[in-house]
Length: 272
Image 1 (tube, rainbow, N blue to C red):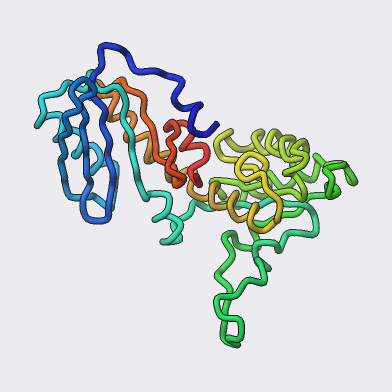
Image 2 (cartoon, rainbow, N blue to C red):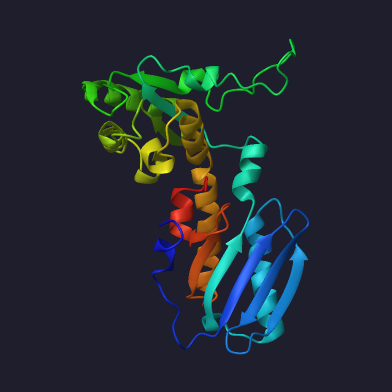
């Protein structure tokens, strides 16, 4: 579904070229393909690490100028970028809060038993993705089959929302126990948090990574939440500038799996 829902907008018959832009550490590369003849043009400009969108626009503008192709002639634009990966590696995540089932607040601190060197007495786990004072547990519980054991305490969720708002977090990750089997509690938590935060600020594990094993599901959701504002603003800058230049093509983003999805889907689930 990730690959097909973004392709629902088919290119117009009046368009004739496909544009691909890939941002690297040193150069940003562009490739333009004529759909009718198969002719390929390539171009290269220096990357702009302080704002990768500038390098993207520079590469796109240059290759269109070199080939004389009008922006409205593009059928679609595909973009490959490491902005999300770089944000994670460099630790430049947006201030993020974490909400989980009561009793599992330290999930991100405990992590897993996996060690890079089993007998290294000096081994230290990586720092948690979210500081403990931004982690909260809420009363609710599902069993291993997804049945409700403890009803969700909505008043507690509203109290957590107020605390997170006061703490200044920009994004929130929610991972409740066994929500991959029953997402009802997570969905309700998301609705309540949206009373205090905008819709795009809340990532829930049942939508991001609906798989068992709590830490991996939680950490994936936290990463999605942490890079969501960064990637969202980045894609918004690119899209607005392309539209200003007259590009009306579908804008697609490469996934790490090799597939593509729309800019809107990429801003919602940048961890892909």
